Structures are given as C-alpha cells and as structure tokens.
Image 1: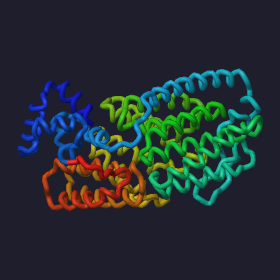
Image 2: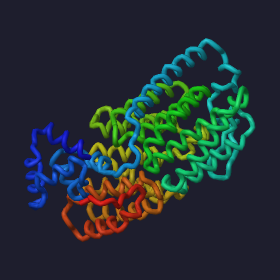
Image 3: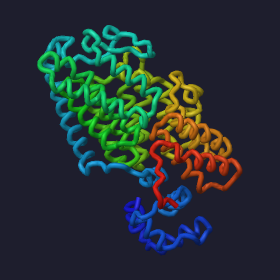
Image 4: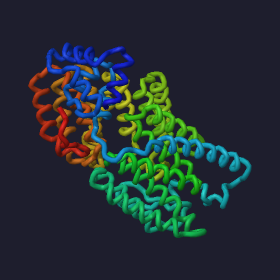
Length: 445
C-alpha cells in the first residue's frame, strides 16, 4: 500500500503536502496532513475505507487495486513465485506444441487411444457420484480411491469456504504427493492425473483462503504433473486458476498466463474450458486497463459458450453452465465500467440461489451485482443487495467473497450518506471481524 501511494503520487508530480491538501479538498475535511500521508507510505498505518475511496479518486487508481494493496498479508510470497510459474507455463506450452506435432504423425496417441495422452471426460469414462457431476475413469479404467477423494473434496469446496477447508486440502495433497513419490512404473502413471487434479484443487482452495504463496506452489506442482501425465486440458485449467489468483494484484501476469493456457488448449480443450480461459484473459485485460483486449476476450468466450454441452466437458468443469458464463461476462463489464450492460447478466435468479447452494457463489456475484447497481445510480437497491452479499460472505468463509464486501465498503465511503448507505456501512463494520482475512491489528484508521 505504501509503495503504491508513493509511486503514484510521484508519477503525478504531487508532494506529500499536495496529496494531503487534495484529499482534504475532496473529502471537505481538514484532518489529513502531510505527516499522515507519510505514515501511510511508510506502512506505519493503513488508510481506512473512507480514505481508500478518496485516494482512488485523487490518484485515479482502481478502487479494487487499492483495496487489494490494503489487505493485511501473512507470509510474503516468494519474490520469484510468479516468475517461476510464468517460465514453467512457457515450458508447458512448448511441450504441448511438441506433443501435438508428435500426435499428428501417429494415428493414436502414445499408449493407444486410452494411453496417457487420451483426453479426460466423455460419456464412456464417467461414473455418477451422487453429487451432481460425473467422476471420470482416466482412460476408461477403474475408479481409484484417490479419484473418489478428489470428487469428495470438490463437493466440500462447493459447501465450505477456503478459510476452513484449506487445512484439509493441504493434508490430502501432501499425502497424495508422498504416495506418488513412492510409486513406480504403471502405478505412477495411474496416479499422475488424479494427483495433478488434486494439486489444482488445493491451489484453488488455498487462493480462496487468501494464501497466495501456497496456491502458487500447488499450481506449479499441478502444472508439472499435468505435463508428465500428458493432460494438456488439465494443465490449461491449472494456469486458468493461477490467472484468476493473480488478477487483482498483478493483472499483467494474469493476462499472460491466461493467454498461454488458451494457446495450449486450442487443439484439445473443450469448448467450456476454452470459454473459461477466454473469460480469465478478458477479466485480467480489463483489470489492466486494456478495454479492447477485454472486449475481444468476451467475444471469443461468447462464441465458445454457445457450444458448451455439460456432458462433453471434463468432470472438473461440472460447475460451468450458461448462467456462470453469463455472470463472468457481467463481472468483466463491471470492471470495464459498463454497469448497464452488466446488470441483465448478473440479475439471473440462478446466481442469487444457485442450484448447488454455495454461499460463496451467492456472495461473490451479489457483490458484483451491487457494484453494477451503484454504477447506474440505484444506490438503495445496491445497498439491499450488498447487505445480502456481506452476510453470505461471512457464511461462506471465503476470502474471495470477503474481498467483494471490502471493495463495496470502499465504494460506499465516497457516496452521499443516505440512510441506506449508512445502514449498510454499519452492517459491514459489524461484520468486519467475522470476514475471512480480516485483521484486528492496531494502526488502521
């Protein structure tokens, strides 16, 4: 936060005293001085929601970026974690290109039609789980106990937020990785795909718990295993998850990862996977301020989305349906400051009460809907939706959902203090200590 404020202030040619004066003029108060700005920049204190809103206005910064920078952090990320993942992604893409070239010269993939390069999914390899999605027999073989554990963890992720589920996912991932390390020959080949899938899921859950460093480690491991298994689609899905993880803090890196994933999945990726990756790239481009690239990504995603049939998608995309695809487009349009176009996509009844009943889904998309309503001036309605989102964020136990509430709080701080705004701000204040990723450390003003 301190570096972001200081660097932006210097680029605009403002002194600390000038920035303090501009903030006071915008907020019509006299309480911010040069010394307070200096404390923010040194990291001695964090600006509260009200001053985050005015800083976003005065410095012309996206409120989401300021909110992300103000989020308390635990263990710092390895300095080269994102760089390592990007280098690994480029290696994966080269491997995918070489594999496709080899397959073009052979009538069947190595090992036959059901060998290690056979794509997962398809009706012939699916077994009902009772959870609403199929469990895939890799290559049509027998379902293993590890496959069932992955399916169970998926179901838990639908119902339990990352803050509570991360220790379980971490433990299961460690056990599976140890088992894979000890396996040899055919046993190792049989374990590769489910362990890679478990790594992807562990990364997603760690991201939902707010542990970015652990998520990056799991995604790197998952990409390596997917590459060894010859499962290009799963590797692309791993990179898509990593892109989503980095989208707010480093949208440029997120955009590059999504584009690499899309290039690697262009041949063997299902329409749903390719549509998802197009949405990942579009959102990252929108966050980075590249509206043209974001619009192009949305157009590609819409064309691919029209071809999505759930029974032909990999089992790990069980959650992707037309309502979800439309909502992702709406979310991107909000970031592009086109709330009127986003509203019809975010107001679908299925998003407020999704068929799987996840509080995280309701919290996340209710938060985006509230932002769209604010964008068109429907303040009272936005506050009503925002109150639902805040309560669901607590129920979800998800840092991802909690960030929507914090972002909404920042945006409300710069709004006229109507009764609805005051009520929602008070509710969010009361819920703050219950939101995942909250901090009670001193120095927040």
